[in-house]
Length: 275
Image (cartoon, rainbow, N blue to C red; front, side, top):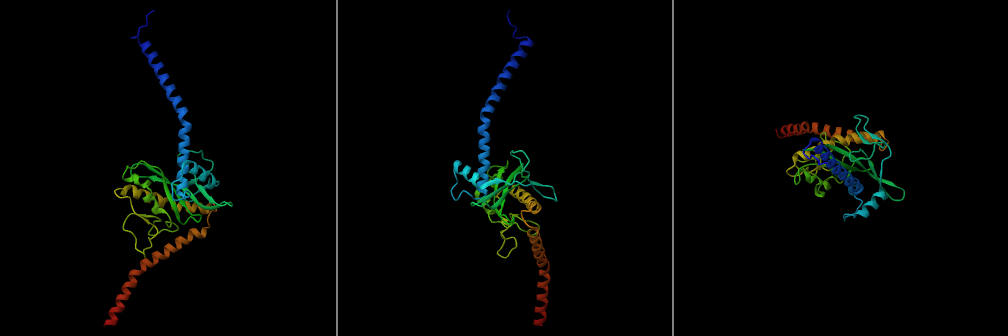
């Protein structure tokens, strides 16, 4: 019996067979490549955390060294870290692992496991899409150790330069214990002078990428007070450390408001004396 290749039944059967073959081939390739892809994602995550905690030294560590440093010095925080005011989650020990999981990592040193810092997930909408990063902070949650960008889709050569070491290095040692002029981190604008309260809290914007730079500033200033409150709630820092910055900031604002009056008073006194 000769097959009628023009019949609808033959066409449908042939299409189904070809589709099944290609689907099976794609699923087989995915199953074969998935372990390697997962290992690459895990290594990228470990390298990012080793770098942001500055554990690798001056020279970029190789893959084996990254795995060794991560295994020896970095672990997941085993307690919830949630801002009681906004409900923003920085660490959920029960959440399944994944590229968007909100996890906080702890870095330690020495035989006693002395904590040298925490890497907290910070994220927000960039100029084009979501930006995910880790901000590493000291155990007192008052100074930045560094920042590393995990995922972004900003324009290469412009906003994409937020991944470059020369820009990220500006965050090392940044003071985040208190807000100045309503911000913990100031991105862009003129560099602050030696006597400016913004000194130690300012980083240059990425040239030609004002939108991306302002997005990073925005989500950092939303995240920093939230994770400091979460740290107090979790018992990682004392409440007095949280309030100290607020008191100091209030005192700075008071001096700023009073300073024009003081100048005016000096001018009046000078006029009276000269008369």
